[in-house]
Image (cartoon, rainbow, N blue to C red; front, side, top):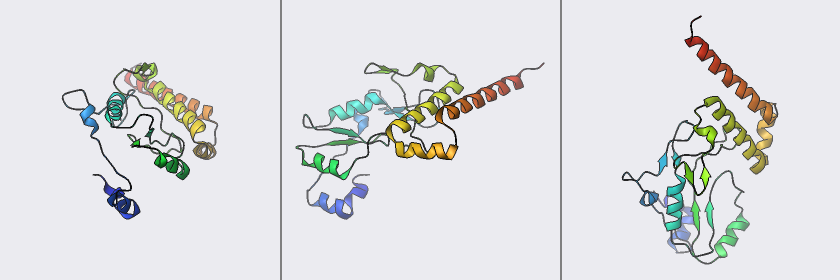
Length: 195
């Protein structure tokens, strides 16, 4: 799989000449169960799998990195990585860790809400109670509110788009979704009852 696209063009020539190096690590080596699982189902339900924070943290800690060197998690939620920052990082001594464990979509014009999975607690942080409540309407409303807050705070360039496209301020969007989900739940419940 690696170096893949990093092995061609200018990056590939620089790699071949020794100007930079790539060392891929199998994070399954840091898994703790007999199946070497690195992901689990999302708390609160939904499609896909979520990378386990405990396994990823153990894999990063196991990497041979000089003390004081940065460890960067590449995510659409973070600050954009600029050429100036790359040059500063390249000038430092020793290796650098770049990790990316997520794929996020902007199909709704918002950053993805925070994802949680097992363990229930990691480094003193708990999975939010609402995600383990079983109340799907509240989970959906929480996820939308989180997406809106993250997008507004971290990516104002994206935040400007959905508000114009959807034509409503964020609280109205969340309340409309909550009302729609509550109506759907009521309709399902009413359909199962005979009068």
